[in-house]
Amino acid sequence: MSQDDHILLIPGPICVSEAVREAQSIQSLSHTSPAFISIFQSALKDLRKLFKSTNEKDQGVVVAGSGTLGWDITASNLVYPGDNVLVLSTGFFSDSFADCLRVYGANVDVITAPVGDSVAISEVEKALASKKYSVITVTHVDTSTAVVSDIEAVAATAKKISPETLIVVDGVCSVGVENIEFTKWGLDYVLSASQKAIGVPSGLSVGFLSERAIKRALERPVQSSFFASLQRWLPNLINFEAGKPSYFATPAIQTVNALRVSLKEILEGGLDARFQKNKEVSQKFKKDLADLGISIVPVKPEVAASGLTAAYFPEGIDGAKFIASVYQKGVIVAGGIHKDLVGKYFRVGHMGVSALDPKLGHIDAAVRAIKEALEEQGFKK
Image 1: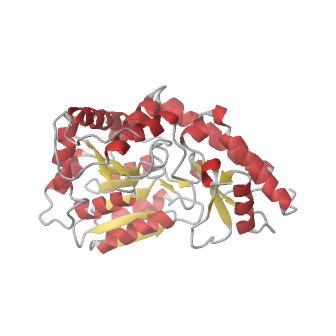
Image 2 (image 1 turned 90 degrees about the horizontal axis):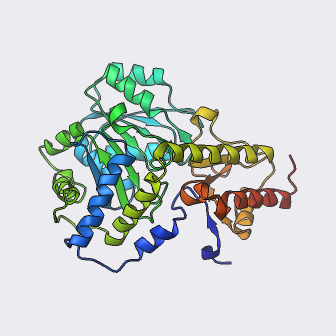
Image 3 (image 1 turned 45 degrees about the vertical axis):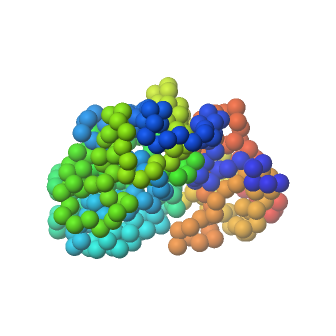
């Protein structure tokens, strides 16, 4: 059985819709042609709706690359060498963001939450009051733990205690599945990627910038990156959204077209209804796991993400054999990557069409495969 025959339920890349697959397979276009300008303009305009931005001076960012590029964009544009940056860590990817910031010369302080929990707001308050931070970063959903952080509360705390601090959100595993009120909450940069809940093949770094984040990037006296420079990208993106040809680096033509189609699908029927449906699917899946005797990594329901589940192997279960058995039953899930939980847990993505199109039967198939894999090792609740 090849991977093409399997249901892909890792936390990204995810299965994409047929319409998105078709959009990804169009013939190449000139990146300055009217056809592509229209495609890119549509995608950038719809990004505003996805992020719920009401400030026309905010700007969507779509650049060929991965979600990791968003870290470099943050570090090379919004953080100056020697700046203090506060990182709220809920897992592997939060820590990796901190590592990226250090590469660019930031002085990084990290507040690490207990495994399976988010950082307490009281800790954020204490840190922000202790020194001046140019930027605070929070990973909305850390894919290593499936913990969701309350970015609204973090942003409100920063606004109250340190209003000059830029608020940067790693939304790689949250954009498209968790609610984000960019303008209302006063966020400055949300970075994401195409291959998770946005529902597009991998290849795009997708994000959204506030007016004040743009100002800081444009005022940066010395550039520390070429490809990640917003001083180079912003004129390009602004022109495309205005329907004008522009060039800095060749965009990923087909993937931008797939993004255009996926954003139409996401917005159809309303964002809030979509988020609620995904939450219900997530809650049912977690209940199904609990019924099988499997506990999850997040320590309480309010910090459990809607787009994926991180779950412990029951006692006595060989994790590698379990994941291999699930694979043999036609479902691909992921192992765990948190340094404190190596070999102790697995992760299942439930985003996009796999979660929202019940006719596909992807989530039910995952539950069956997990149940049978446990039974093969003699596990009974």
